[in-house]
Length: 503
Image (cartoon, rainbow, N blue to C red; front, side, top):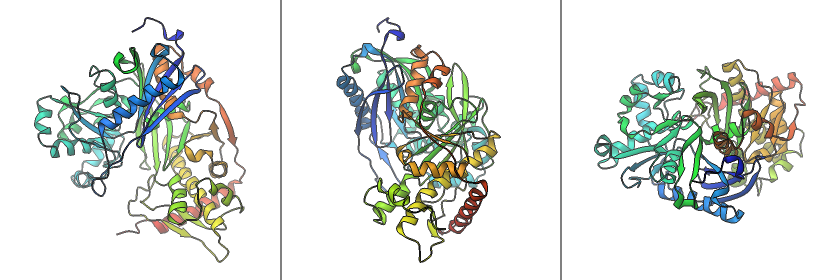
């Protein structure tokens, strides 16, 4: 590797490995995206409730966009100070240490095949222990039960694992292994905290959790800092060795990219669902509202924790109006339609189409449209849909404030639906605090770049990163407290009618 210091190099490269596509983004010293390359890859649904990816497709697509972004920008590997990885979380892979080849398809975070195992473990009384150690709920969402399924169902896998022939990892580990030609079997603390196997208090793999799921410790990656020199990218991939110096799960990376670096700061990513994260400082918080406690990032051996709440139907509500009901022909139309009326006319849409996430966690809730009159139009329903996204997020953030004891001063936002000005104004009104959209909305990749750049001195400290973050627009609350409370009370009444609907 060149001896040139990071200060003489021009860019940090972020590898953003998502659920449906792999992306690579070059960031310059100002934190602006210089060039982006993206490649989608196939999704597989072999049975109802099962979701799989081809591990080789993940790797090849990520390598191709990394090469492509350098080629298109006219940048050489020698101009890259460091590489950071951010990834779809919880997706589970198992591979041969000798060949580096996966022995089965990756089980994606959305996969529900281990629901029965989770119910069995709950019935046996293990849920409290799991939650106490990991900050998570005993749910098939997380990696641990997926790994057990692979060991129990892939022929010969358990025996090979016990002989030390196999390696487990989430997507960050898989990419690090491939990029370093098998020299680094690692995961960062944020990804480790999503496995159901990691004690977030002691910062290590937990022997009791491994025993509970019958997982050999020899499978596990080394847990490293989210920001630190992890290894070097093999020169064959991009033309020269480059430090791999940052790793974080996608939502943690987005929180770092939004510069939510102080306790009480929070962000919301408005995607298909909504992911809300609040910085709780140097200690995890045991939620009283069934939120998740998780590692945000680890740097120089010090850990920052987050509270996380998930909304299942965010932008998906708009997709349903478009594809399911045909009320709009494109997602962009909803803002104009909803803005054509001053309010929802008393209508509430509860988008519990696939159950409700935090703080209810009711898989048996179902969608409801309530409060309609003869005067209700499709514009009122469109308005109710945007308000529903805001109501759900407001409830999660209220729960976070109660759990953390840290009052929210503003909410930083990103994701595709964050381009909807009416949605963000509704959110500010229902929270009673400003909602702020940044200039750079590629916050997930930016967080990975920030973590990597800090590790090699491309940026000096977190204060420099906070100064780089800039607001594009602030949405100030314009609703009285009485009106806010009245609307939220109506929302809670509507939600109550949707709970436990399905058998």
